[in-house]
Length: 218
Length: 105
Image 1 (tube, one colour):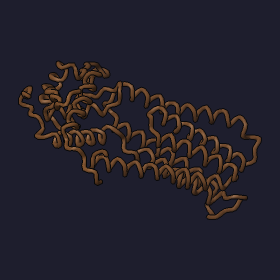
Image 2 (cartoon, each protein chain N blue to C red):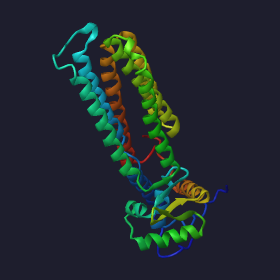
Image 3 (cartoon, each protein chain N blue to C red):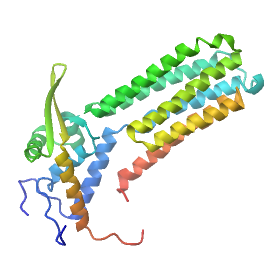
Image 4 (cartoon, rainbow over the protein chains, first blue to last red):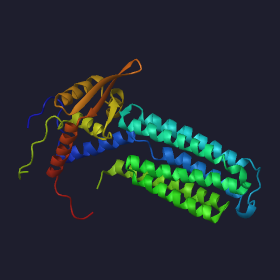
């Protein structure tokens, strides 16, 4: 076979496969956001924020760690806001210069989070006056976490990502379990199983991406 | 398919162009990559990359779109369906040339 020009073929089939695997891994590393870009900040926000809520507003009104009433929710909101800023910035930096279908999908998906939560907030605030403080808190968190679970499942469908879909199912299930256990317990379940679960998923995906970057596929 | 080893596609079977095609093959269907980003991923000079893209475009393997983002001209690149097919066939042909994998692993 005659080469087309001075761009010479790789030395052997094995060398060719090595070039393919290496270049594929390099391109994927540069074009796909690191899994921890999403799961790191969001998982930490849930773990710490809901953890503080549990410690301050435990089951049956127990206070495990004394702290001002405003502190847990403030920390949760600040961390959620930080997570939104950090993950948007870092993922945007990775996918910049990729145009076309994925960027449209990404924009629609991001918008659906924003819009769904705005709609949820506006509708729930219409009803929550009638509830006790404890039930009010549980209503807001259970609907918020439930919506998050649904959006994760939808994200799994959009990107054909089974892990993301499974995480959505998991969040939906633990949310129901936590809500059945009642206020206080719900915070603990969401902190550990929800936030901890996200961190674990991110960590496992990161390990997997490292393996495929070094070894090549089986 | 015959018993003989298939002839490898000379357009793809070349160090630099192979890397261009591999990098573009990691894009999702329907996505396009801006020229400077492709250049950064491959670590090629703009001139060198242009030459190889031209050859891939001539073969019908790559689609190059010139567009504007605001007032800045942007060149967007992606594999054509034909290019994707050619790359899959190329990969399959190279795999067929490898010695069969050993049983123990």
